[in-house]
Amino acid sequence: MIFKKLLHTNKPLAMVLIKAQKEVFSSVLGNHITKHKGDGYDFAELRPYETGDDIKHIDWIISSKLDKPHVKVFFQQKELNVTIVPILTGSLHFGTKRLKQEVLTEITALIAFSSVKQGDPYSAYIANENFSLVSQKNKQLFGVRHLVQTVLEYDTIGKDVDYKKLVNNLYTMIKQKSMIFLIGDFFNTKHLNLKALSLKHEIVIIIVRERFEENPPKLNNLMITDPINKKTADIRPSNQALDNYRKKLQEEEKEFFQKLKKSDIRFTKIYNDESPANKIFNLMSRR
Image (cartoon, rainbow, N blue to C red; front, side):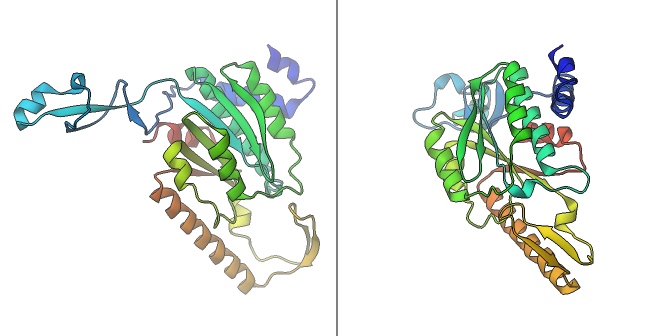
């Protein structure tokens, strides 16, 4: 097996691939469910007939009972285009137990393997200041290794993200209707507006966080280096400063979640001390 050979050359990569493939192919994970409605076999709703509706979808029994024609609407079960977008910035190079970048890599592997299992073509881009194609559209198992290795070994130090530019790139470069998985730690999301993009595609947000950065304890003197701007400083934050930091972070997150809900965008948060598989599979099956 190719993954066993990897253990001798790149153990971290092999462990991510083996774990993710086992999680996906031993699960009873169903198909990715898209919220876009159309022809298919998964019933969505019953509604009154409108001009232009296909008469073959009329439910004659219900129509006769209600004395008005009604049609059945179904969730699409056609081949789904999956786009995986890891947002690789310097802030991912952090973790008290495990780097956030490692967790993000495992999530990427889970989504890619799930797409292969279900016969859905996937492509992948890396996003930060730049927006670059990593994996062209394919359904092949061997392509997952290249994607996962690229994400795992990517040098995030000094990288930041321009959310406006990211959304514009997604809107212009992804032509076919797709399910787009955006994976990152999503700080400073004030200028992240996904409303227009969500009308064209189905967006899924996966937030990767470290509990320490959300709720830091009282700290002594520390020398820290910002992994984005690479600046170093000696700090000793007061209790008031820590309280203000927590409050600001909570307010930003609340505002972000509200925007996602208004745009009908599915999302979940995964901490780097968690195993992400269950949350990912639940997110995929949620409507």
